[in-house]
Length: 142
Image 1 (cartoon, rainbow, N blue to C red):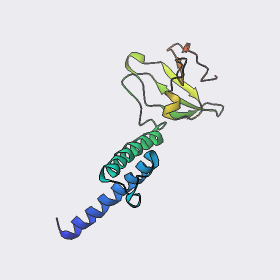
Image 2 (image 1 turned 135 degrees about the vertical axis):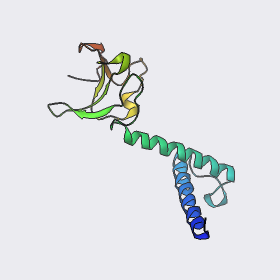
Image 3 (image 1 turned 90 degrees about the vertical axis):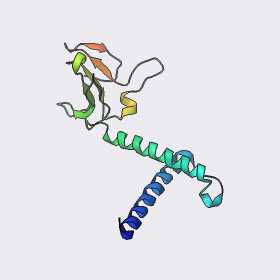
Image 4 (image 1 turned 45 degrees about the horizontal axis):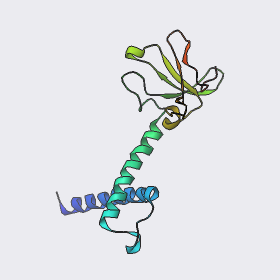
């Protein structure tokens, strides 16, 4: 690796660490002392927190695109629209759940779609293969 390439890589790495540090400061608050930089341990904690938060934000942005939050029983949720133009978020069963549907009104995020209320209710309704509700939690109005 030439010196110029090495220098360019060092600059790129510094920008990445600085980016994660700033996000980490949003999450944890600024470090104490030393001109806002804090100790090496505080900086490291904020970089780690920033990386985690950045990954969480990216997953939230991808939610509803059909690219994230699926598993072996359910497709990744997608934002869709009913025939009458009402927005919904929906996930389709696969494998042992084939033909079943999870659905809620609106284009919601992962935290709202998968939320558990204190009463144990989730943020979506569950419909069986014959179209009958398995759990009508009032999250979808058909």
